[in-house]
Image (cartoon, rainbow, N blue to C red; front, side, top):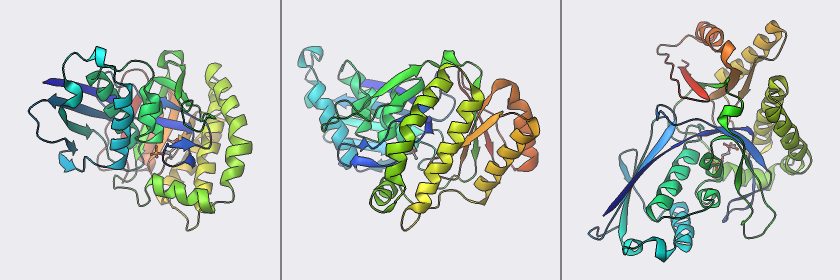
Length: 342
Ligand code: PMV
């Protein structure tokens, strides 16, 4: 018997991935950039996966957040198929390749609420499988087969997913732009507006955007390439104002594409819109850009700011958006504080 347990954190995109040129291989139409939260303390916004392989298991099994799920799910099977191709029999002395496995995975944050749960989940699964079977080298392309954005959670700090050019996806991989220590006072505040599962899965919504949005191709071809360059420079030079403007503009554009999708996908709600207005009002009041918002496929806000603003921001947010329960959770490196909004 062999057991491995791994933890993987979510990543929060600042230049969004939206749209696939190949649905099966999960190849995107544009590059994207994100930061991966630090999971060393295991405290916040992580997936934790344990995989057990045994010659005595009669079947393969999968549990997600305590509930047994279908082991034959296409994306899980795609990941396993790709992983098996990379197994080196010499690195696995026992007959482990032929043993059945039991996978048990849980998230310590809302699943499928637009908070990158599938990114953390598949990154963790692939990392654990790679450990189980002693797979060496880059595994971001394997995580990509589970959920596109998962490839970015394989690396820490600032990460770029290069869309690649090849038809087989061999160059559609994640690379680390800079470690967390490069910008040590960067913080993320997550404002949980709604914990329920999103109405439109990103897979289905992306597909509909690809076939109906008249803005999506222009975004991917003419806007994102320059944005990626500028974002890389902003991160490299730690230019917060530039970083923040690019982040907010890209989030807004992604949600504009969602509205341009037919029928449209509404991910943001009234509270999300109020948070956007609040951030702009706060930056105006401060006469410089101190905070940036970004939203994935859900109403929950991720705010990027620097350490010296965090306590003031949290107390103002608690005033403006009163909540019954508010909690602060720190993780090392990029720090997360979670405030639940009513
Ligand atoms: O990896 P997926 O299929 O869950 O796509 C997620 C896409 C966004 O979260 C909306 C943006 C991104 O780049 O993470």
